[in-house]
Structures are given as C-alpha cells and as structure tokens.
Length: 452
Image (cartoon, rainbow, N blue to C red; front, side):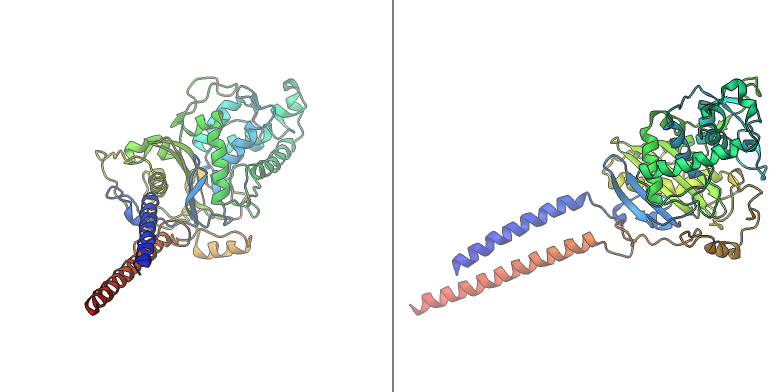
C-alpha cells in the first residue's frame, strides 16, 4: 500500500508541475476581462460592426475576429489594393508623368473626395499616390488605374507626344483592365473572397471583400517601403503641374486620424506609433477603417473594421471613426505582450450618442450616376440591398465577441478558463483521494500493530 501511495504522490507531483506550467503559459493568454483601458475609451463590447479583425503581422496570427471571412462592401479601403496593383506594374515609376483624362475628373457628387485634377493635367505617380492614400482622392484612383491599365497614358503604346490621339473610351477601358489586374493581385496576396469592380470603392453589385482579405492586403502594403511611407503621412502637398503652375495648390490631410493625431492624443498604452492604413465610408459599406500600429516591443498590429457604427458628431468625425479601431489595436497589442507606457496626461474623450451608421461621410460618397441616394438612406433601402448580391450583408449593429477565439464578454468564461478550472478540479480531487487513502492506510497499520 505504501508503494501505491508513493506512486500516487509522484503522479500528483507531475500534475502539479503540469498545472503550474499551464498557469505560466496561460498568463500570457489573457481574456478581455483582465485588460484595463484608461477611463472613457470604448471597450471591446462597445464595438458594433459587420466584421472586424485584429492581426499581429509580426507573428502572423489573428488575435481577435468577428465574421472574418464574410464578404462585405468596403468603401475606400479598396484603394489599398489600387495602390498595390500600381506599384507592382513593371513600369511603375514615382516620377512618371500620368495623364488626367476627362473621365477621371467627372463625379456626379460635388462633395466626392478629390484632388481637383483637370483634364489634360500631367501629374507624377508620386503625387497621385499622395492624393490617393492621404486624402482618399477618387480622381487620383481613376488616374492611377487608367495610366497603369496599359491602354491609356503612361503605360500605353503611344509616346507622350501622341497622347492626344487616344480614343474617347480608352481611359475607361484602361481603368477596367486595371481593375481586372487588381483582382488577380488580390488572389496572389492570399485574398479568398475579394472581387472589385472599380478602383475607388463605390458600392457595387460585384464589389466586396472581407476583413481577412483586407488584412492580407494591408500587410503587403506596410511591407512595401514606397506605399508604407504614404499611409504614414499626416499631410501631403503635391508639386506644381502644367494645370497648377504654382506651389501649394493643394494640401491633402490624412482622413485617418490615428496617423494625424498619434498615440499621445488617443492615450494609447501599448502602441508606440500609428502607421496606417486607410479609411472608407459609403451608404452600404458603412464606416470602415484599417488601422495599424507598432507596439512598444516593435510588433506590427493591423486592425480592420467593416460596416462599423461609430460616434459621429458633426465635428471631428474622423476622430470618432478611429475610436473603435484604437480599441482593437490596444487589445491586439496587449494580447501580443506589449509593454505598457500610458499617456494619461491627455484630456479624456467625450462621446455623443450613437447614430445611424448608414450616414455617409460627404468626402467619400457615391457618384450621382448610382441609383442609390446618399441623402436619405433608410432601413428599407438597406433591406433592399440584400437582393443585390446574396453574399453581401449591409452594416449591422450587432457584434458577438464570444463567437470567435477572441475574449469572452464580461459575463462569460472562455474555453481556456474552463480548462484551467477543470484541471484545478482534477488536481484537487486527486489530492483528496490521496489524503483519504493515506488516512485509511495509516489506520489499518495502527490496527495491525495493536493486534500484534
């Protein structure tokens, strides 16, 4: 019997070692309940979106996710792929002069984001990328697509002195060829559910992507030295052109307020520097933003929100658009083991009530040729869009963070926590069994001794 007790003791010791090891490992696998943000900032359960994701590009792991592979409209986050497709062209040149077509200057909505380029203008690829990635200029998206599509302007077979001989539809045809190449590039980057039908991000029947696919595109963009520099700029000023022969003719400010105001303004505890990536807003896509940041430990974190419902007062709308992405980046950096360096001296934010996420940012609205009104998007309009493409879903106001591998809500227990509880209960049971066995054995030994 003593031999059995000794064996059980060894097994108990092994179980205790296993338990302590799991505690050490799980100490780094924290839940949302153990994360403490500064007062006043949205928590993970406050985020309402059709889909979101948080990705550690350094380790290649998704940290949080919601509807990761759900195809959705994505507005101007499309321009991430627009830029990636251009930079991969064999004739890509930052100094190359691109020709602005008449078609690239036409937008039915006068409030559509643009650099205000003019037909016949010659502008460098560098300045077009600046307008595209910083201001989210739709005319720059068209110019880039047309000139790198192969049938018009810079990459066409015609020399610059003969560019006036292009057919009337050459620019649009070149744009369409470029969009086809965009879809091929998306697949090469690992995108699984992406199909775009325009380089700007207009809501279209065949225009959709996922949080996963946008993450892969953003990772590729941030790894590209040329493009990473543009999405990291708070402001951009293009050089003089033949149509704008004076300096400072346009000042582009980044629509991504994470980049503009930085981690100090947003009181980030774990992000040392925000370095991208892209905003987007249309009636059907809702509020979209790809945010990225470098942790204090040097890890690259990428967060994507599609169809988000955010605080949108009349002023500082882009600041409020960034709030849920700021939260996702904080969680992502925390789960990645980043050191904490709080910025507590900045004033705390104040939030107004939530409003309908279908409200359109006037700087990124649909063109007038669309049959979708940007002025009065009602629930009936949103419901009707379900018939456009059954794979697409309009923005929703519900997020269940417990559906994914991410943290449980404040009222739930994660799978990892259940595992710890089960192992603890097993060890306690073994200890009690051994103690009882030891007591019974000792009683039997005393009884035998008394009988002798």
